[in-house]
Length: 115
Length: 116
Image (tube, rainbow over all chains, first blue to last red):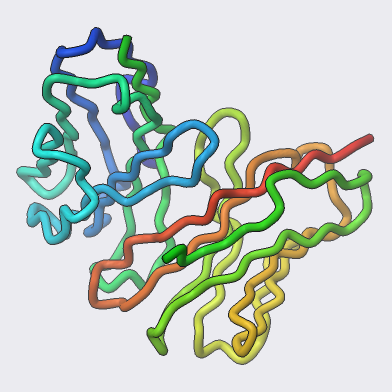
């Protein structure tokens, strides 16, 4: 079956532009996570959805970051008025259950470059 | 406080030899999980192996094994019979408290280079 997919794979934005990053999780996966990975660092948690409910957004760095998963499948991470420090790879992961008992499957990521 | 520590920014190993990648963690939870992921240059995170805090046996998955020492709070990854395709970044991660959905906390990673 298909894995987690993300689009676009690469995005270049001028400072101040808004961007939207899409994640298609594995079908049937309840949990969906977004992580941010700066160059040379490990991924850092941004936000978590259980079906359509956003249960944890403690990792979002500012109110310019917004995520949604309206129908409990596809998710979109939106960044408003992008800044250079937003340049990173944004990883999406999904997991089968809501308790975190299963491993997370990651997508290929979206590399965002803000110029 | 850093929850996951990987002290080896880079490691070299000769092809066909074994290598150990270090990971120490910090948590006050009794129930937690430890993961290793591989990230090749393509960028995708590939799940390798999982160890639960209550598991008494060290986890093994093919050429990967996890040396879990609970009292020392360490979860080192051992790769046996290294292959050229093992060259990649390796991340140790921890999941605390299952009722919080399972978000992962990652270390800084270790870059492994396998020499022919």
